[in-house]
Length: 607
Image (tube, rainbow, N blue to C red; front, side, top):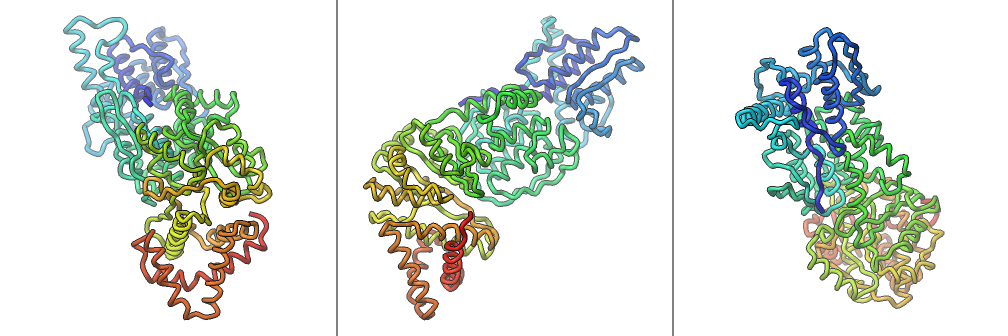
């Protein structure tokens, strides 16, 4: 899909001020331009009509650029005139310290401020705009084509906004897929051009430059658990990058954020609390990360957000709605953090929505929401995911032949068990033990399923034919908060539905280990708590064998000499880099943690 980005308001506002300074006609503005451009344009037009000595009040909304530019412009061109600048309450709270906008305005008014290699990218932009503006002006005058509509070369000075593009990089980094962003230049004079490099380095994004714009996609699964960035020179990128890191479970170590407290909002705090606070960049970043579910908003709330976003990107809301509405397969978010579960649907090839907690559940829990969504779906197959997984790379592929081939494979079974990997950068001992345990579980899962005796599956990565799920719905134990994946497997086997296995890297989803012992045992107790409800013979026999083997190890420790080589081979099959002493420690501890989890799961009723 192609996205038309707004013009860079930073460049447009510099052109407007230069036109005003030189007495040239102001460029035309339209409703699809950022509000900040319209505000400055209208203020400069009002100044041109102003009669000397008459009071004039200019209302600047929450436009900091207009405020800084006009403060200098009034001082240089309208000294002593009774002209008042005012705006929204937040604009009045802005500190009075000089900024790069103040310096830019002084340079445009002819102040001789020497170039510094360390100067703000916005000041460098000002110098480049002035240079291009001067060249265009000289050319226009020499060719006598300077018209009342504005500078003939005006369009050549304007670019699409790289700051706005950041929210689409955020969206694709989180959801996958691909987009074409119109009007962006590789040799841009905008400092925020660096967003392409940041997302390539830290989030597995790929940017392909073309004459008409850029093609962006996420081709590599991000695995870094820490991003270190200085936002001193790129403050407008902070909301998108911070929420990308949060959504992907990556720790952001941000420096240079001091002045972000004095933007349209206190941006670090607004990001942390997921509050819009009348800030256009916070609103767009929250929507792109699905902390605001645009589709579920009331009409009044949509209008309110649209007004806020229009400050820099009037078409964003319409575009995000269009993209997230394009569906080819149904995806169900299967998060499990409280009794209020959340699900939503999204596109197979255009994105995956991870909504706020509680959406679609009507206060009745995740299973109710799951049923509600699947009943409303027209898709033949449903692909289920946990909230915190990294999507399989197959979901990033937009090639039509690949999708057709995949659809042909789907038709061969009613329920598909897909691979999972547990992954963590620089894992501590607890995380290493979980990675090793998960590898053994996954290898056992796949081996048994391939033999036609499936004993395990996971809602973190599972595909089911819609009609098969509907046939099994009454057997998914709605009274139990979780476990719909295993209960679905049992019911599918009882109904004689065909169960398939896809054990290939492209279909592998990545899950994260628990990072505290408390969270670890809470999860394992929840898993164990469902065991008494299983009725499938294969599942119960497998569980009994595992329990007996571990009880025998407690009673007769030397049996570990037989058990360890077998289980270590399962682990190495999935995680070849697993160290033997980590696997051995897991083997020693496993019987005791298994009993703790089982007993805790049996006696704890609330999850």
